[in-house]
Image (cartoon, rainbow, N blue to C red; front, side, top):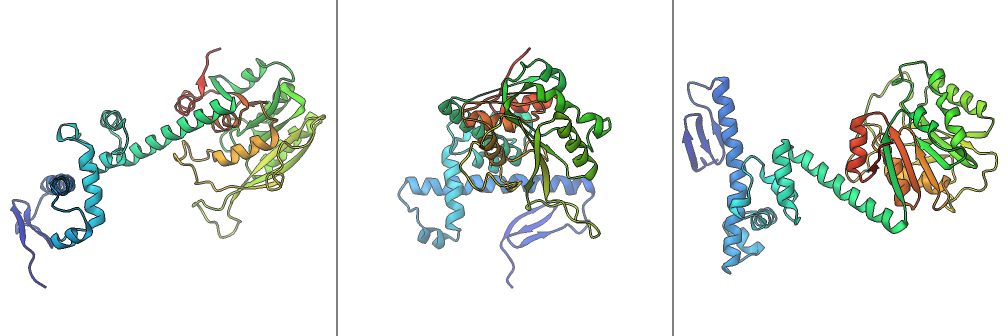
Length: 363
């Protein structure tokens, strides 16, 4: 193997096109870290420089094809990406403390400057920038769908039971919610589930309550007991997902589902969907399919939320969620033309709702 052409010989060792050779005396921690920072700068600068070089040649008609790339020894697909990003930014608009990848992620957007300014101010990684952009775009699409469908969504910061107490009797077509599970409540689950009786008062006799909860036997029993107290007909369904990683016990079954309690008002009629799949008691929807990523680990997929809204809420009906968290059920209901309202007592969750296009209201 031939020796690579020397690119630089610096105090931190010898750098060639084939690798790096440390200096004879070695490097202490500070020197090693400083050299790493310098290498990161060189890597980013190289992408910009190659992009500028290729764009320069293309503008002058020197060529812009795969044959030319092969002739000068660069990968055509890679150099085209570099050049596309380079063309999107004048030198004066490139942000020094952000990586080439930051710039590439928003290169095709008219608002790229604003995104880069925000990423720099917030200290976002490129992954964080990508997540924020996707979430913002998804929120815009959801708002557009809601506007076209005539739906709306509001949320306020409040305790669930107090908020339910402010609603009128028999004013809600569907209560759809995902309350804290038994592992997250301060009191015994048997006492916590009494909120379901407060919720029953606001649901129309023609309406329904759809409540997610864990599969732990004690929790299942508690919710079934609460449903029995309502005196309304009820049944258990499941949400099945099989695309999550996590503990895989050898002596017990690995959990790939959550329970869904469905309580039917005494005058509830047919379900509001013609889909045979959505009228089954097992909803099969992947966990990890959100375009903008999840706001928190157990956020329900919007696809699942929309299927539930379409199944259990009449067109144009009223949907409430007293444990709104990041507002997934509210967003889904509005996108399908329903009038949605909810609450949460966590200010961070309220902010997430706002960022997803849910209107935050004060009592």
